[in-house]
Image 1 (cartoon, rainbow, N blue to C red):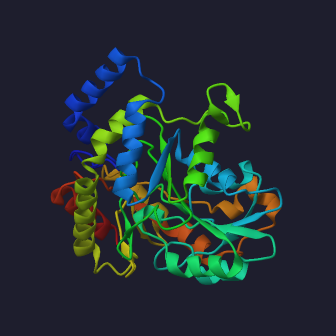
Image 2 (spheres, rainbow, N blue to C red):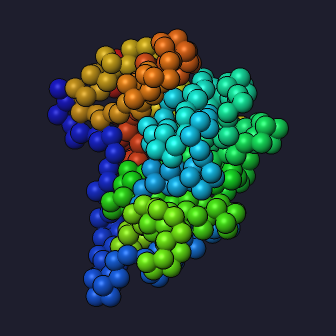
Image 3 (cartoon, helix red, strand yellow):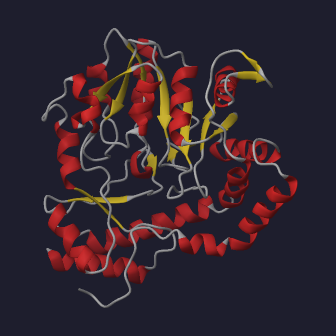
Length: 370
């Protein structure tokens, strides 16, 4: 057991202490105005985040899961419709499909980029397929052009799950503004995180965004006048105020994450027993997570824990093999690349304020293990 200062997997204290004064001031403004739901802070954040994403419009919602669910409903997902999605992602990507009335069709991922494989998507398209949901996993944009071409050929929509990729770019374009709709989460640990829950839907189609806006407000077109049933899915005004403050720092934080990733690559690039994250030629990665792969994952994780180094598992059991989706008929071996990666993935500490010394300690511990 090491006596050195522990290195956390994620440090959420330091960035919030640095912004304590403006965050507390935003809370006081909300308290004094009694503006807790909707209003200028939410509208201001929607404008600013749309501009940041280079998207024509944005609707703030209560969570990334709401963003996905509302996007699928707005696009007309019906019972019997199939949506193609990766199995190596957080369950929000897929549970929202089921909750919106659709059926999931899982597709394998590309071994190098860890994002959905366009060739596997092509093979999964069937007569009931209506949409594709690429996940910009760990901060790396999925390869969108082949997916958009498949969508065009087969009359499908593409919804980007950008919950881990705030600020990432695909061939120079911000993610979230490329598919029909983009979905973001502002869970506290994200690259842009609220001080609670939050999410957003971005896009260029005003009619679709208006449906999302109604869905978050119980289906209301105006107060107490309901066009449909909906949900209580609003972004809280206080969270919007916090997000506006933090958005101004997002590019700086993402640059910090890329700097940490470069230090890792320099320190671990010659360790043959691990596979480091590979940045696709089309991508500007924002490193929500720094995920290495090794068959010795469990033992390495125990070793790092003994050294006082935090780690994470994202994600140890692929969704197609989990109980909620047993009825879909997938078995071990159905998605071999996904299953291999899930058994080997280990997330190392990653946060913008991480120092080169801390990265060096993590790297030294990994090298000692091997």
